Image 1 (cartoon, one colour):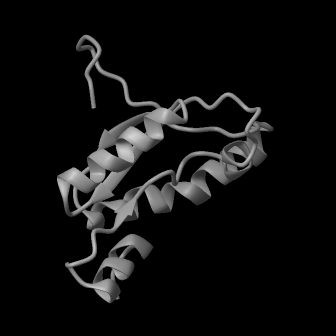
Image 2 (cartoon, one colour):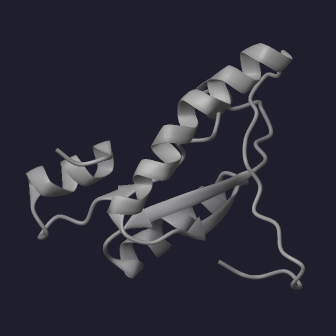
Length: 110
């Protein structure tokens, strides 16, 4: 019906529930290993800015940089990247490729 699990979940639960979607491009094995130092950027999706901000703060607490990435419908982009990250890891022999948001601007706070 829609292009993402996040959007389908939001539709199912209704707008009274604040669904946030994130961490699609972070290695699950790295997330599960408390001794692994995490790195990379995370795109955070949701229809409510305040809820995205809560998720961003939690993601920062585990050592990752997080970015507001818009509505829950946008999460289809990161969900699609999951299979790309798996392919890149296998093809190049990486142990958890991720993404990084870059800018010519000075450090921007999310």
